Image 1: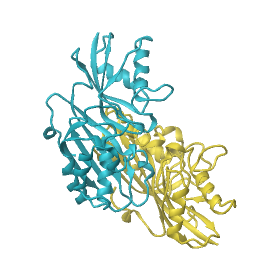
Image 2: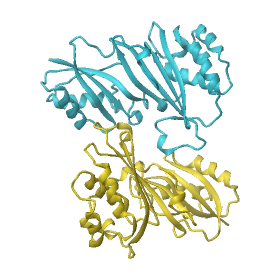
Image 3: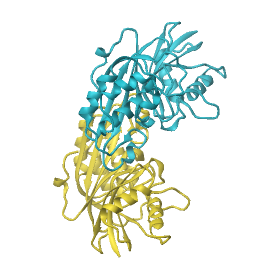
Image 4: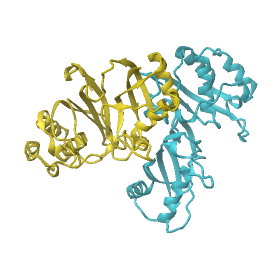
Length: 256
Length: 256
């Protein structure tokens, strides 16, 4: 028996999110279906660094599973990709320590969020960006990120549906990069609550649109109530970009 | 009654091609459905610069139609985009001369074709590139393009199903550009036969893979028989990029 760690990418457009849900097409169920077939009908449970919602994408999701099959790492990659549907791709497979856990061992994550600011919608981007064709003051949005960076109780930036008790997280880095008609957000931190990135983006857009002052973010954080933050940005602009393990820190994360 | 010329883009992944086919979702039928609704049930026929096959994309397809509605051009754009499905987008609308014809007046076209050469398939590109992870000698492919450029009878590079009589076309420009893991072909000419770009790409890939010498293309052209050219490259890498009217020529077309 050995434990395998895999880095995977998926296009979230065709999935009801990552996690298994009865009767729905999810990333986890597609992975487990293929592994079950490879293990002659034996169920193999797949663990991820965290869930992603319906429509949310991943460029660097990390999963792990245990297997009795003695297959070399590079053959796992080929075998999984040959059987997985085209909207999931295994980017890397490596043998991990027997006690490695994709979720509990993660020391941080990077998410990106992409807004498309073109006047007319782009049919090729409909599943991959938030189309926001209205004016935004990116400078003032950057200013607002300074109030989100650091260690805070992010209750106000967390879905009210979340059952997590400890809502203190530390954000190491938030960058906004303009690239033609795209505005690309990069969030790096030790962990993110349910809908946290999407609510931060929605709130930063409120700031950029002139509906909120940057300093108000400090007050919103203090209120510890979801209703004070901005709207939740739509799922299709969000990408789980990378999961960090061990000592990796924002300075290593490199440029956007 | 006025004639309108529109530039449109569409993601071909969700369509059975451009042209109306009974019971199938096509670009033309989506356009005509919206126009019929706007004209209170009156049918409005839409004419395009040419068809595109199932899975083939357009960044700059041109269509025209006649309408009795007195709507300013900028309102047409908004009204059409508001009602069209998200995988079709109208980029520009202008009033045209009463005798303008999107197909018969076209003086040239630009197509692009995108090959993705990454080792592992990219789930975000599955509908938008041909994934070709094998070695290719791009230098020798560029050499081969010189035999395709110019005025030739392209019967060998035309689907055997085509019923067009005159298969002489002139290709003004063929460029190959490498951009990270992408290889982007650009074809500009006065017209293209059925499957012609895809067969040229398939043949150039045979050359790049070492299965054919560049000079063989001259012989293939002379044989005037489809069976001598390479395979037809898959549809999802192909984009109708621009349609030229009037005096526009390759020198005006600009860089890739």
